[in-house]
Length: 320
Image (tube, rainbow, N blue to C red; front, side, top):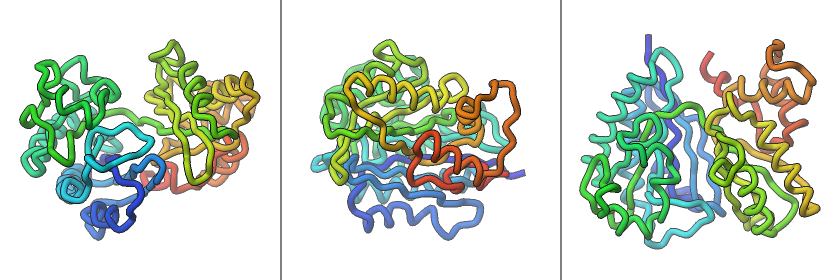
């Protein structure tokens, strides 16, 4: 049985399609690997790529992709709404089928060492792969971003797990780690006032006293002249999508602002959607909700105002 993983590398390039096509080329035209999505965001100046396949094939391709990104992305001239510390800012690894979290973690250590040797980019192990307590959460590693990492990496508590305690001149540093499914979820507000999005984000994120499994911040989307509350839901079993959506909608009312739409970046587990749909369909958590994927999409767009969403955004579309 093939051991299947998903990786979701985040690249600090969201404007130049030609550059990104070169970076994702190693994921194409190979057996045992599927390039699922390339999602570019010009305002964030960031691209999120989703790849599924056999563990060794995927990780080897990621090293090749990382080598290209290191050559083509220069963070000294990079500007965007999203915080970043590396050309390949982060590469999460998620076990999908026939592979345990523990085996994935072991693979991560081997992969991170090879990646550093191939790119000369210092590596921090995070989440379930973290070897130090201060590296479990990505925001704590990324604090200070590329510009601040030059000094931060020289502090003993922030020496990298692999590589020299000196950032790559143009590509910075990268975080690699095994994690559970994280849902990257953004909610669009009918305003261009970033302070409103910042106030709402502060109300709902865990670090400010909100939901335990929500990380949140504000973002301004220049091309459509509106702001987002941009979120990571780090455990959808404990904090559901609908809770994030309804919390933002509730807090927006104090500013007389409405929610116009929402989006999921990358893939989402079917269970994360059906658990939230039960709320809107007035079902109990223990009730069964047996829907075809097209029905799930229909309801998710109706109740969660999801845009740019179809069956191909659901992990079960690819892995039965």
